[in-house]
Image 1 (cartoon, protein in one colour):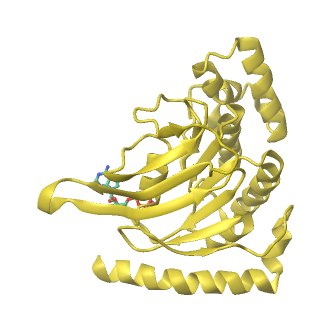
Image 2 (cartoon, rainbow, N blue to C red):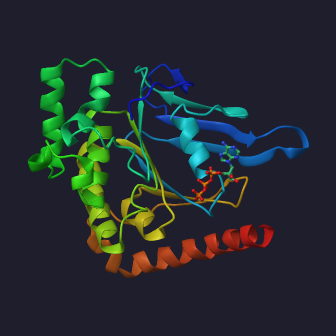
Length: 272
Ligand SMILES: Nc1ncnc2c1ncn2[C@@H]1O[C@H](COP(=O)(O)OP(=O)(O)OP(=O)(O)O)[C@@H](O)[C@H]1O
């Protein structure tokens, strides 16, 4: 991302033990009075530096709302969310629809956040090209997004977010628009990348498989207003690879999470 934050999350002074992100009694509703819709919370959440946290939950339970609050795009109705940082722009967000600009070249898209930060052009170009190499896009620097496949466009979005070296990466269903095979490949690529960068990440997905492959932690949210009703730590040491998908532990955890989620999805469907 690169757009200015209208409501930056409260920044707190760095300390050794504090979590990178902390939400306390966080909630958000939309509308007022009798027509107010409770969308989220209350949510309490601590995310440690370098941790990759996945959130799964039924449709409409408030996952994107939580992410938008973390990105400073939305204010909470009650409670607070703080990010431990010295930077005025600690978070970068990646959306399902990529959020890249069709009229800019791949290089200009990746450089976008650096331009906003007024990084000198030569340095910005070098950093952007470096990320293009890391994401296998070096030959496409001068191409426009329309010339790329869905997976390549999503890689551009990831490169653009990581180029600004954000302290927190916020990903909202980033692979939802991709077909199943490409999605698996992108999961493996992101796994590889984040195990190298160790960027603190909050990742929202509807896919339990994705959450288990990628997450240090998988948090399950209830139906709206979304609260965190369960937390699991996939029992796979890092660095891990996508091969864990074929282990019995993976299948067992996926079933366990689905049992939890199924109740919430049913509840939401009955209410709709
Ligand atoms: N700007 C808004 N104005 C009014 N209602 C909103 C607004 N944004 C979200 N909502 C409502 O808040 C609830 C939570 O929405 P949100 O997008 O956070 O859910 P979600 O869990 O991300 O959903 P999905 O998984 O389907 O993307 C929904 O009922 C939604 O309609």
